[in-house]
Image (tube, rainbow, N blue to C red; front, side, top):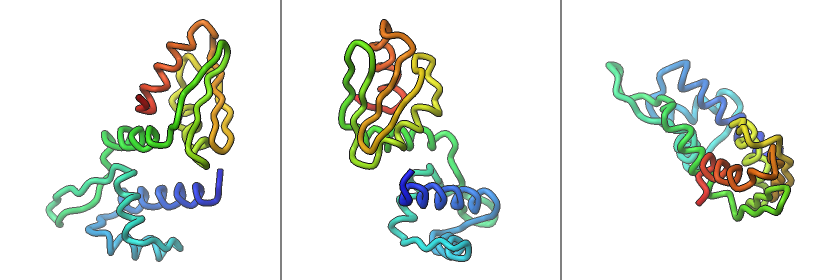
Length: 153
């Protein structure tokens, strides 16, 4: 995993922890909380992070606060991943997924976490993922499952 990807995961994890453990009313407050925890972030990056994490603003008796919308997180991630895919191709034995440079490992991790019954495993490089199907007879079915979970058309 690249340093940049590690930083994003670390920042996302901290944002989720902060939002889950206390009332966060606005981005200014969240920027300060992140800074107190050693993470400097711009408002534009934070706004993008909140969207990627599926964070929503929820009215409470104390005011409007940020909350993680669990129903939206998976769909948001799926939408983001579908933008990373360039192509899906196969031959008689393997499936090759092409991504934009530096994106293959994140997409492969998402595929692995979904534990698709038709996939034995994945191997990711910088912009290419090799997917080994359980059976060469079901490559079309496996490709369809992949396209469904990553939202690729």
